[in-house]
Image (tube, rainbow, N blue to C red; front, side):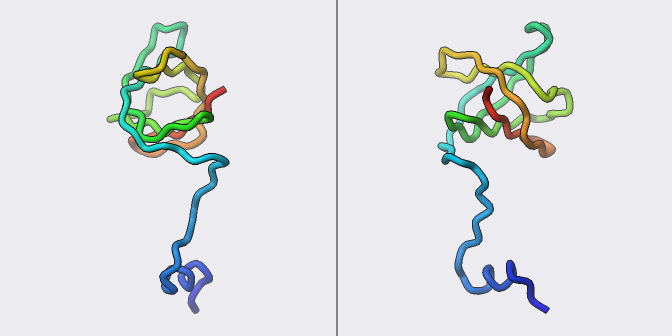
Length: 96
C-alpha cells in the first residue's frame, strides 16, 4: 500500500517540510558561541539566518549547551540563543 507522502512524491509535486514562521537566508558567516560567563567558546559557521534564529554548522557539537550567547560575523550584536534541534554537525537555534 502506498502512503499519502509517497503519492505526493510520485506525483512530481514538491512536499514541503518547512515549519518556520519566517524564511531564512542562506549564507556563510563565522559565529562565536560562548557560555559560562565567556570562559567556554566554540567557533562555527552560520549556514542560514533569520531575525528569529539560525542554523550553525560545527565539526563536533557535543559540547554545546542548550542555551548560550552567539556573536555572528558582520553583526554588532551578541544574542542569547536556545537550541531547537541538533544533528551530528549542525544545530538550529532560536534567538531570545
